[in-house]
Length: 534
Ligand SMILES: [Zn+2]
Image 1 (cartoon, helix red, strand yellow):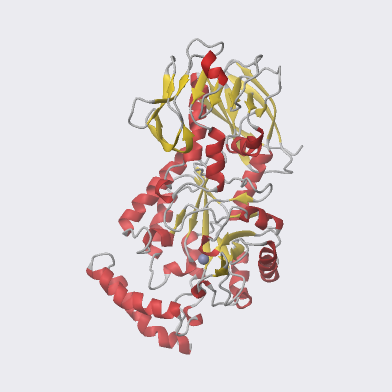
Image 2: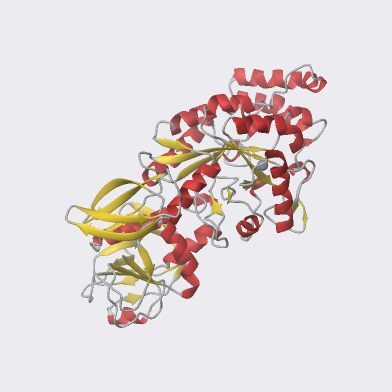
């Protein structure tokens, strides 16, 4: 068992860290014996009973002198590397002089930032940064878009595991993926628009006409769009008056096509609650064009059909991220139409502030899926896992990883389809090694003219399906993680060639299958387990 001797201010972060690295641990109790002690306090007690120790600390502490470690003055933010893995740190770190084997260096230098401590009382590793400050930063602010593709928090877990291996600590964990799968997949759709018919002589209509005609031509001439797609866009633009007259089908209404493409993957649709409400940003109102032009009540037929098909309906929040009254009003509006009380949410345009998870939780939402980027794809929190934001205690965050508009918009990543597919493949490969959930947001309008991102979406799904992926709605995936969070390690007993593990779970009649992974002297063994009701 791991004992953690952390600062009081770190307690909540420590708890969350060990929900992501699901392994037996507890806060340090004096005189109790631990396999490993993780220490982040400035002063360490004299009589520690632990077989091994890891100290994370960005500045010099008293113990350093006793262990013959020299700590240079801290610097803020930088890149480190261990083995061949590069990892950014966002807070302070310092260069160490120590007599044992180096483990972590500043990238492309010989400067040591972590290593074994020679000649100490017990096998000890000293690391020159603050693990839990890094974790707190990632889970609350999130990392900058330029590092989006790095699963930084998960790398911190891997680094700790590598250290535990080199300290010969035997331990078990429950990895963040159901038995028999590489990772989980969550296909989501923000419903910013329902039909092009809702838009008469407004910003959206003129924008559509420009992009489908001149914009398409320019893209085709520069090789970024095929002539056949260009032609489809022109025909769509020409047919617009007939769509408004009601004689032609509204080409933005493509819920059926999503059902066809996704084939019972259990998609999640986020609908805007109010028509003509742009919402607020800071002290002023948000741009007018942020407002929905459809009325939720008039989409009831589509919503009923989606629910019948096993899809989930969530809130695409306007002001819910901002204050509890708005969050409650938007939630009850969704409830009126769907009749479902357990609602998840994603904010329109990803509007957000640090207190938003608490606001949404207090308004009764079970999860949020806004933590992602508008201008990048990847891992804003640095983890592939569903987590509980530090300001909340029940609501879970399902991070958003891949968003269509981030890939293709000319003022965002502006990728060609080939470049976009290769960027997505990188993310998917990362998922495979780590487990967790890949959440994709493809706007409902994106299959239709003038975007025509349907072929790409089919390619992307094909790529995802080359792995063993458990698809679920937002709610289903969040529930899986909730059950994993509730697991307790009642007893763990290592034997010569295995381990006896008793897990406790408060989840009744759970069918979710977990794996117990045993790490013993560098070898890793997976054991499937099933939870029974207690
Ligand atoms: Zn939106």
